[in-house]
Amino acid sequence: AEKSVDNLRAPIICVLGHVDTGKTKMLDTIRRTNVQDGEAGGITQQIGATQVPRDAIVERCKQVREFRAADVKVPGFLIIDTPGHESFANLRSRGSSLCDFAILVVDLMHGLEQQTLESIKLLVKRHTPFVVALNKIDRLHMYESSPRKDVYVHLGTQANNVKLEFKKRYEEVVVQFAEQGLNVCLSNDKKKMADPDYIPMVPTSAYCGDGIGNLMAFIAEMAQSKYSDRLAFIEELDATVMEVKAIPGLGTTIDVILVNGRLKNNDIIVLSGIDGPIVSQIRDLKMPEPLRELRVKSEYRSFKEIQGAQGVKVLAKGMEKALAGLPLYVVNQADEIDLLQAECEAALSKALTSIKKKPEGVYVQASTLGSLEALLEFLKTQKIPYANVNIGPAQLAADREGVRIFQADIIYHLEDDFLKYREELRQ
Ligand code: GTP
Ligand code: MG
Ligand code: NA
Image 1 (tube, rainbow, N blue to C red):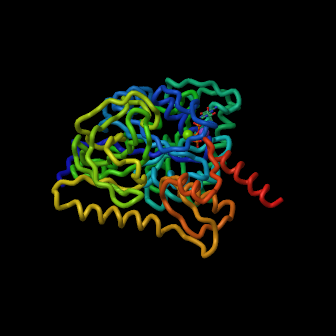
Image 2 (image 1 turned 90 degrees about the vertical axis):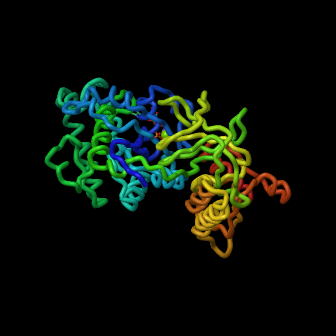
Image 3 (image 1 turned 30 degrees about the vertical axis):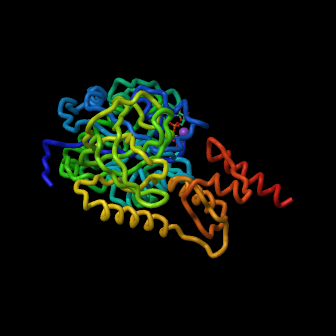
C-alpha cells in the first residue's frame, strides 16, 4: 500500500488505569463536557471514543514552554476511554489492542493500584508506548491551580511544602514502577528522557486542567517525531467493531474503530454475529461532532465516506446479532464474500475457544461477547467454575427454563444481588 508521512492519520490513544483515577474526567476537561457526572455510579462501563481535532490540541499546547504548537502535524487524536473497574478487563484489553499509544492514569494520592498493574502488563505485552498521567495534583495540600500555565513552570511557583509533598509522592510512584521493573521520570527530565528505557510521567489535574497541555504536547511530539511511519495513512481497511448498541430511532447500530482505509455509504460489509457471519450493507455512517463522545446519545452527523482514524457509528440491517471486539470487512469483489465469512468464523471460534472451561460448573449465556467476558471475569473472582458458555439472547432461554435473571445498571449491584440470592439459597 501507498504510504506517506505527509498524510498522517490521527493516532489512536487509549486511556487506561485503575477505577476512579480520573480517566473520563480528563476527557471531559479536554472536551469541555460533563460525561463523567452522568455515568451510573460514577463508573465507566463501556468503551468510548472521542475525536480531538488539531485546533483543540494546538490551543492546549500553546501554554507549553519550549513547544511550538504550530508544529503539530497530526490531524487530531482519537482518544479511547476505557473502564477501570476490575470486571471490564476485556474492554481494557480491547481498547489497548486498538491503540497506537496509551495514557496510563495514576492517582498521585494512591500510587499504583490493582488495575494499574493489570494495564501495565497489557501495555508491556503489546509493546505499546505510553505516558503516565500523575493525576489529581490539585489534591496536594495547599496546591494552587493554574490550568493555563506550563505545569512544570507552575509547579516551580508553588509553596515549598507543596513542592515537598509532590516530590515525596512522585518518588513513591517511581519506586512502585521500579518494583514492576520499569524506569519512569518526569517528562521534562531531558537527561533521563534521552534514554529510551525511561517512561515519561506528566503531572496533571483532570479536574482543574493543569498539565493537560503538557500531556497533549508530549504525545503530539512523540507521535510525529518517532512514529510517523506507523501513523502514515493507508488505504487498506483496518476496522474493528467496538460496541453493539440499540439507539432509539436508529435501531441497533455498531460503533466501529476505523484505523486505516475508508468506509463508504452502501459498502457491503461482513462481520461476526451470534448466529454466524453477517453480510449487510451500510445504510448510513454517523459521527458525533468533534470533541463529543461516541458513546453518549447526542446529535450525530451523517457522512457519505469516512477515512481513518475515526470512531464511527455504522447503520446497517441485522446488527442486532453483531459481536463486538472482532474485525469488520468490506467486500470489494463479489467473490470475496465466502472468504470473508470464513475469516469471521475463525475469529469468533478463536475468541470462544480461548475461554477456559471446567468439567463441572454453571452455564453462562450472555447477549454479547463483551458482557460474556465481563461475567466470566466476575465468576473467576468469586471462584465459581463455568462448564460452558454461549452467546445469544439470554432472556428467552431463561423464561423457558424458569431461571431467574438479575438486572442492574452497574455491575457492583449485580454482584450484590447475586451474592444475596446465593446466601438465601444456602439458608
Ligand atoms: P472509571 O471509568 O470508573 O474507571 O473511573 P475514571 O478513571 O474515569 O475516573 P472518573 O473520571 O470517573 O473520576 C473519578 C472521581 O475522581 C470523580 O469524582 C472525579 O471528579 C474525581 N477526579 C478525577 N480527576 C481528578 C483530579 O484531577 N482531581 C480531583 N481532585 N479529583 C479528580
Ligand atoms: Mg471513566
Ligand atoms: Na469513575
